[in-house]
Image (cartoon, rainbow, N blue to C red; front, top):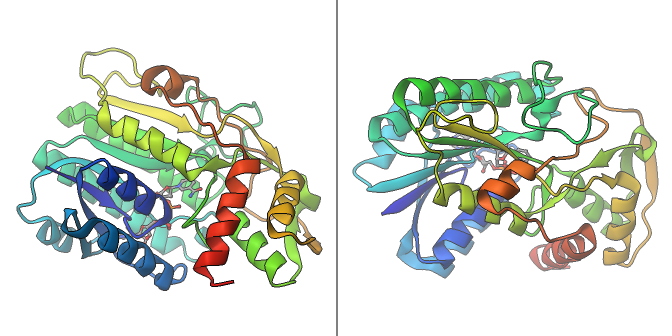
Length: 331
Ligand SMILES: NC(=O)c1ccc[n+]([C@@H]2O[C@H](COP(=O)([O-])OP(=O)(O)OC[C@H]3O[C@@H](n4cnc5c(N)ncnc54)[C@H](O)[C@@H]3O)[C@@H](O)[C@H]2O)c1
């Protein structure tokens, strides 16, 4: 039996595939390898999995927004569960290219729900802390209202949660939505702050600091995130009419998955400077549209239900990222 991972060439998809393969599962990864960021990195992640795990890892290049191509790529594979992590990510790019979000995150999410419905499969899917928009009651709780997204990216992620609720209600498919909070670590994403700051510091370029650095983020280390995703795959929500986190009586639950600790941006920069052994030159810019000032996850629900317990502070995780980055870039 195989676990299907969408977005397997992505940062979190690669990390999940690695963990599942290492414990003996078989994985079918799908990804369209789009060029939102350097596809060489995506290919390197796929190569890493193929080289280390041989034919227990198979990969198909397909766009899951194209339902016919998606169905053809899955063929007769005996799938046990779906981890739907593929999406058009990034808050800022949703201002430049909104249609990419409608395709991958709305049409694509519906297509994955249809696969789950057709094959009667449980599915864990990626949502985002961005659904909390400009909420200013911290920490963010899954029971908070999330009706005011401030980017199209956030609106599509919230729409994914709502579509999932309908499918869980109508077709009784076990679904789990995970609201990720700023994930970082080895094999990370070049469009995110940790990668950009590391790159610019090592190359001696000024780093862009928005809102004079007055921002806080709940940074979560990749290994901690993956432990939570695996726990969610291994335990499905019951169809017993009980109230689930997120308020559903259908087999649909929503969890925050973060670090339960919000870091000042300037503290993050200091940790990266230490790991790089070099001071950053700071270039201050105003707040960017679509950005939020602070994120902070309440993780009580996922801690209680799935035993999720993040253990990696940025003082440990950032040096690991910088070491991986130097090796990957041959520095
Ligand atoms: N990394 C974070 O901090 C973070 C935070 C909140 C939410 N998320 C969500 O977690 C998930 C994984 O994020 P990530 O950081 O690994 O991002 P990523 O961009 O590295 O991975 C997503 C992958 O999905 C693939 N993809 C996109 N559209 C596709 C399509 N139509 N068909 C097939 N493949 C497609 C991309 O090529 C990419 O490899 C995403 O849903 C993202 O929105 C991530």
